[in-house]
Image (cartoon, rainbow, N blue to C red; front, side, top):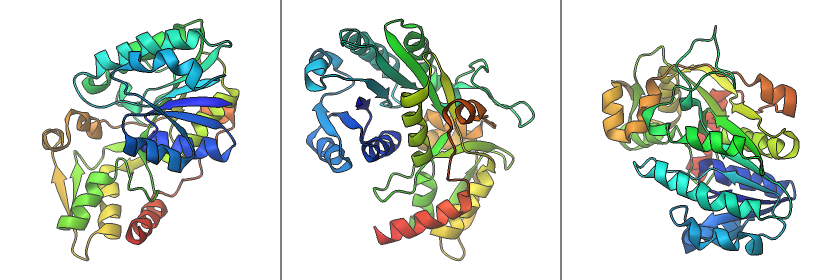
Length: 308
């Protein structure tokens, strides 16, 4: 299969490319600059030069650049105020280009857990839970509806939980700001109340889910990409402090407004207690996450970064 990916140099996209290439897929990915193209080539993908902010410059050539395209995985985004317009304009150009392909193209749109409300383990979030998005992610909802309702596409959606990684390129996802302060200043921030828990998934497990969706999922299917529940912000901070800080590394309580000021509005999600259910992905796709020991993953990550 020939697959085109946006956001291929990011945390999720890079993991997907490695996974697809390892399974003998022919992968093309959007590259905004030469350094991005080199990264994509090192992962085994063929770069297509372009930018999500200017889709008219490359979507018209997509059928020539990736002849016989079977699928598209859209993971590219940023957290700027311009993203609603950027994503809409991207779909305005990309979807018609895919309609011109000789066969229906599978299209996986990336949503996220912060499209859903806070909840408890007694009433976990499933794929049918009504959206209650954080303001910074509300723009995804029209894109999801558009992809799923388009009869010319084989549209699907994956909602990743909070993503972390343990790979040597330095992408650690949700853990990055915690690791940075532990290593440089010997403290770790614990955002919001100690009882706030975030659902988590390792990027490599998430990449497996995307591949399985390409291979097995029905048109219109949605899946929650979550492997771990019940890990509090405080627990995460303590594990990072132990593995990356000094012997006297401290845990500093951090308010949600302070986190948003330091990290951006998206950090509002760090205060949203959630529990996601992955049963549909397990039952329909045979997805079985392997990274189920968060503490071991953080220890291993410390070793990887120390050797990098």
